[in-house]
Image 1 (spheres, rainbow, N blue to C red):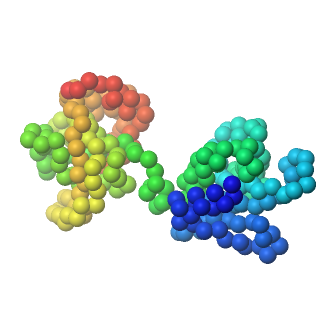
Image 2 (image 1 turned 30 degrees about the horizontal axis):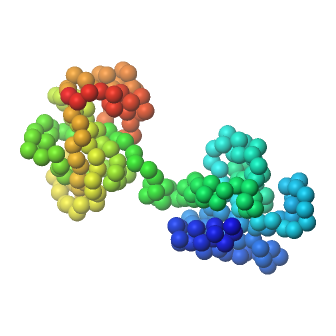
Length: 250
C-alpha cells in the first residue's frame, strides 16, 4: 500500500518522496512546491509504538486533520492513532496494513493537501463558491442585459473562478438581487478605465434564474441576512443562499 500511495501522490499532486534522515531511511515526506509545507509523512514503526502486538515493522502514513472533532473521532477507530513524529493535536497516523481502505486513505491525503496549501493554492483548488456581486445601472443597462441572450461578459471579481455562482445585486434605484448566474469562463482579457471604473479582465456568466425586485431588496438583505453593504464581490451567507434557492423564478 505504501507504493500505491506514493504513486497516487505523484500522479495527482506531482510530488515525489523526500528522504531527509539518514538515521531513518524508511521515512519520506511529501511537500507543496510553493510554501514547502509537508502534507504527508510516510514511515515505518514497531507495532509496540501504537500498543500493538508483533515484531515486524509496519508502514504508517501521517496526515494533517484540520478539524479537532474529526481527529478525535478517527483515532477511536481501528487503524488510526495520534500522529507519530508529528503534532498529535492536528496529525493522525494511519496504518498501511489494510485496516483502513486505500480509498479512504487517499481521501485523507487530499484533505491534508488542502489544509496545508498556501492561500493562493487553496483558492485554486477550492470547490465552487457563491457570491453576491454589485452592478451599477448608471454604468451598464443591467435591467435589459439578458433580454436577448442568457450569456454576457461581466467585470471579473477578485477570487471568482469558473464554476462559481454569482448573484447580481443591482444598485440604486433598484437596490435588490435580480439575477442568479453561473460563471462559465474567467480571465478574458479586457482593458477599460475612466474616472470611476477600471476593468482588467472579464468573466462570462450564464443566466440561471431571475428574481423580482421586491423578493430580495436591500432592506431584506440587511435585516434578515446581515448583508449591510454590497460594494464589491462578497461571499453569501448560508441563510441567504438557502432563501435564494427556495425562491421561485421571478
